[in-house]
Structures are given as structure tokens and as C-alpha cells.
Image (cartoon, rainbow, N blue to C red; front, top):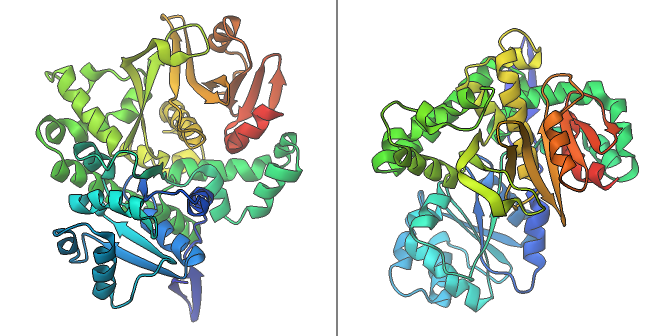
Length: 449
């Protein structure tokens, strides 16, 4: 285990890096145990922990991990000839001075830099002898330009730490286990103070592993600010170096406009508010690029009545969210203390921050599209989330108000129940369940009960 050494007076205090246990591990195990598995591509924004999780999973579940990084290792040359699996495996084994067996996990990192390696996944799929796992920065962009072999790979998306994973990183295994298995969801109110404090920290810090680890080990706001701004510089550098044309010209501006647009009363993303004199279609290309890069989540607005919101979704009207609340906070230039202490400077940002948080929590629950529902200019329900055969409407209230006329309008014309995510303790009132923000990670259990 790696460790940091801090000198305090005459003592040497050793603080281990936080053990990042990730929920994606269970999905990777399902993949490994599937006898018909295909090579796996893990998508996800840069620095969300893809490399770490591939290595840890391989170490725990295989006799060996053959890790290859196409940006750091001179291995693209092995893919320039034929793509016969037998030859590739032997030459890659020679490259690392250790044979690759059928109980070796082959990891191709930064695979987007070698299109021939992406093509080779077809042959690994057909060969079936070797387990192959792949990832890379901006892989969503590269795969859109040169699609992987159709039907020959599996894909999974990895996100920054969820609030549940943040709780795990803070040593709350017993609390999580109790509320998810033995305890009733109503008992979460017994731990309100504990969970509310960690929820505020999570809003401010976000879920990027390096930032979370630093916060847990040091609780140093200045260090978090420095790390976060460094990561933002890296993302902006990606936009500048790996995009072209109008995306290169406008991508950074579009991304940085998200906090301001979310903080407006009508937080529909207005292209005309991004940059004066720029055509909407030119800005749309930037949004598409940012979405494929994993930096934003787009939520289309639907206005229909019925159980299938996709039928009336209008992708020209939408809301746009940042991939991480900590990054959103820095983009908005809001200090950590303002959120943790709910001090001056947080009021204008509160609604945007909490709504972004809820979107990220429910995004990690489903791969199905998430929508916003609007009825003209009269009502809005922030999110429609599909759970099984049901569509669950979710309204976000950052204040302490109990009523929601918009959710009431939606329920008047739809069956089922609604959710209000808020600061109010877990409460059931008629067809509405009030779920405190810190309990969103057990939303599925709450809905079931």
C-alpha cells in the first residue's frame, strides 16, 4: 500500500492512500464469469479511476495481469502486421518478458491511440481464449470516429465516485451494510447528522479519486482547490488538443457556462447565452463532443403524457449538467467552506449544485435515458427515471418547502408515485415520497418499500 509521510513535531505519521472500493467491481465480476464474454471496453472521463480498477480487478481475480499502455509503451508496432491472436499474444509476452496464459487478464490502456488494436478486439472475441479489458482517455470520441467491431465487444461506463462510494472511502461500511440489508429505510433518520455532514463534503469535493483521497487524508481546502484546478486544466487541454474546428473554438466556453445556466430560474440550456454571435449548430457540435468525452450529461426535455417520455422528447431543448459536483463548484468559483458551512456565497449556487448531484446519483442507477418533463411554461419535473417497468418522476428542492405544484400536475395525468429530493427527512405524503439528498443512494430500496 502506498503511503504519504507527514512530519509533525518529532513524530512521523504515516497515512495510507484511501482504499477506493468501487461498485463497478461487481459488474466486472459478472463479465468475468460470463462464459460468452467479449473483450470489455470501459468508458469514462479522464481520472475517474479506470486504470486503477482494471489493475486491481486483475490482481484479485487472475493469476497475472498483462498491462499495456499504448501512450507509454512502444507496442503499436505489434499490431501493424496481421491481427492473429496467437502471434499478438506471443509478441506481447516477449515485450514484457513474461508469457501470457489463458489465466492472464490482458489490459490495453489508452487503446484509442492505436486503431489497429481496437480492430484486434474482433479477433480476441472470436478466439475466446483470453480475457481482454480496455480503456482510454477520450475513448468515447475516438470510438465515434472509428467504431469498434460491431457485436464483438462489451461496453461499460465508469463514473467518478458516487456518494455511496464516498461513504465507503470514509469508512462507513457498517452503516451502508445495515441500511442496504438489515435495516428499514426509515432508520436512515437515526444517522442524519453523520450523513448530512458527509453529503456536504461530497458536494464540495466531488468524486474524482485523487481529490477524494486527498480530502480524506488531509482535509485541506487549499490542496483540493489546487488539485481540482489542475484537473480542469487537463480537461481543457483535452478539448484544445483533441478537437477540431468549432469544438476547439467553443468547447471550453460551453463547458464553463454550465454553472451559470444551471443557476438560472429557467435552467434550460440556452445556446444563445453561451457566446454572442455564434450559430447554435456550431455550439451543438461542442455539446456533442463534451458529452462523448464524458464531461457533460445532457437531459432532453419532454412534454408528453404517458409512460414513454422518449416519444415526445425534444433534443433541441435540454438541460446540461457537469460530470462531477466538485468540478462544477470550481467552475462556479465557489469555495469549499461556502458549501460545507452553508455560508454566504452558496445561496445562488445551491439549486444548481443539488440538482447536479441528484442527476449524477440517478445516472449511476440506470443506463436508460433520463428526461426532464415540462408542461408549457406552467410546470417542470426535473427528472424522469425508469425503474423496471415504471417511470419515476423526481423533483429537486434545495430549500425547505414541502409542496411541489409541478410534481402534482405530473401525477394528475400519470400513474405511480413521485419523489421529491430535498433537505427534508424521509417522509411519505399521499403519492409523494420526500427523500433527503443524503439518502439518494438507497433510492431503489426506498421506492421498493
